[in-house]
Amino acid sequence: MRLKQGSNAEDNKEIEEFSNWLLSVGEGKISEANDDYADIPIPNDMLILEYDDPVLAVVESTYPNFLDNYKSYDYLKNRAILASIIEVI
Image (tube, rainbow, N blue to C red; front, side, top):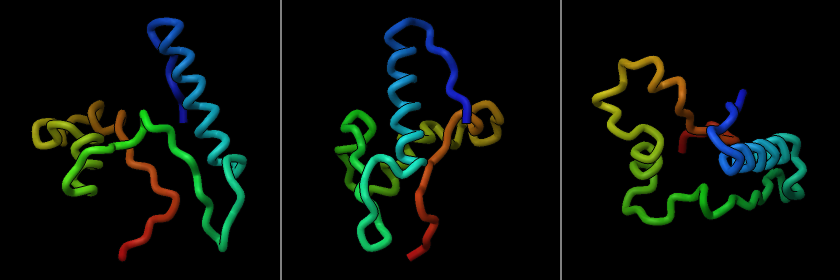
């Protein structure tokens, strides 16, 4: 994954902090495993706090105006939903 440089120093700092956090999660440095699970603290600014349907909230946050843009390569390549475990319940 590549994170691009921001347009100003504040954006660059935010990108660097997110990159470091993401690397720490991936390397297992954020928390200790607990019965094959790990509690990973997620910064509040990355959370969707107000919603009625949690799945719809994630989709709408990640893919705004999806029906107008689903055929756009650039639109889709700049969005992703990351999951530590892909499991269907």
